[in-house]
Amino acid sequence: MRCWSAVLLLVVGLALVIDAKKKSTSSRSTKEDATPSPPSKTSTASTPSPPPPASPSHNEDSTIEDVDEDKIDEIIHDGTKHLVILFYDGRSKCPGCAEALSELEEIDDDLEATGYIEVVKTDDRNVARELGVTTFPSLVYFRRKNPIIYDGDFKDSEAVLRWVRSHDEVVAVDLDDDDFEDRTDSHSPDEGALDWFIMFYDSKDAECNAFVPVWEAVAH
Image 1 (cartoon, rainbow, N blue to C red):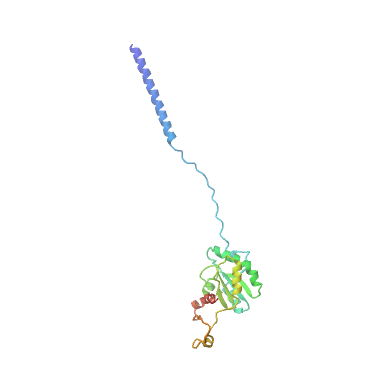
Image 2 (image 1 turned 135 degrees about the vertical axis):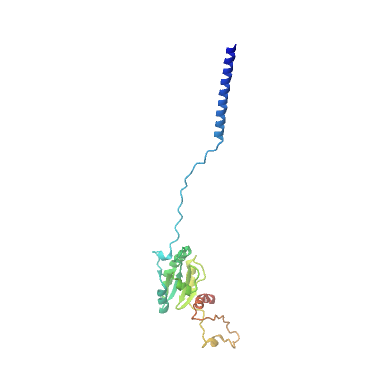
């Protein structure tokens, strides 16, 4: 009888041990299933950014001559041709400068076909400062020795061409002590006489001269 009791206890103990192992295995399996798998890594190919527009100074295909201050002075003092100057920024990236050059090249042949207009480009800061150019790109048109600054944009080459051709003539008049009264009739103007909008400036002062191209644009 004791022998059977011992056998029964042994069987019951084994059953408990097997059941405990099953629960432990089931618990581990459940925890492992509940743990999310780490996200898979995906490789993304980087797309190179497009190169910036070429600087006008390094555009080998440009048909417009790049000049310095000496060359500009030579053309102006020669006095036989009008001069269109495109000012660009050669020290930093200037996408607008490349676009302006592209538009100007479309009308370069038309302008020079007149026989009296020459077209150039420059990044000379001294010349820009003397003419009151503070932003780039900018365009200045010299009618002999009389500059006028372009006040439009460079989105339409035909618009630039029309502007240049419509500003061939100098509108502002230089007055001095000898002809001021005769020209303006300022002391005793006749009925119906023209009104005068006059800028007084020092021709020997650089800052005053820098405003002359803007004043000519106002006159138009």
